[in-house]
Length: 70
Length: 214
Image 1: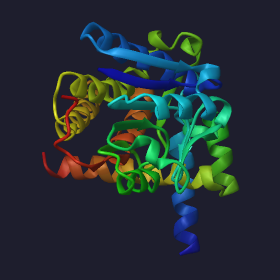
Image 2: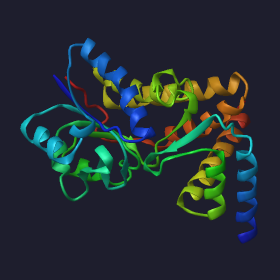
Image 3: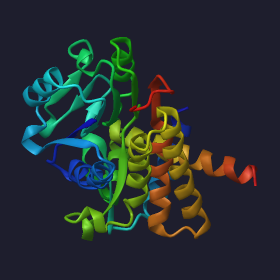
Image 4: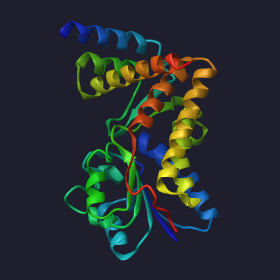
């Protein structure tokens, strides 16, 4: 399980590397984060990092599901 | 008929919320509604409580931060809290663009007599383009989020039921998600998609789906 979580973190970080530096994500009361800050939170394994990973997994699942119905 | 809106403004998110909700407020006024606007330092507990106790707005819109038990105003001051003052929202239609308020507070409000509570049971997130952060209405990357959110308000203003308004908002989310996928995935659109999908999934309607403002 620990290996799977680490692999997921690496995947999400790799995908975040393509995020333009011209944008940031505002996440409720947590504040606004650029690419490097998001990656930092994932590496810290904190609440924000966990939410970022959850969002990425939801995104991937949604896209896969949509492609299956096409 | 009166609509009550809180518009705190003290960081990126609240500044964006506060700016974009004005479009929906202007729409409401154009349809003959009286819009009571408690912005910035008026979006505090003492002022909001006093207004809600003395007046009877049928539709209350909270912009700002929140968590599963709280809706917040200016500089994170608690406005509505589970177990404390949900009764202020009795017999009202409430739309809370406040993170996670629909997770628990929304249901607590329904138990205390709120007619309908529409909100989000997770973080409300948006994409901000840095060069437009001081002028949110020019930020095309955030437009889909607030078109979906404002659609809900406009639909209720038009006299639709709360469920129709909710579904209408969900449809705008879907239209933007589809549009962003079809026009090709640019670096920005990919990140917009993530947040749009997230916000859409977390938007919830609680209480009566057949409530209207009439």
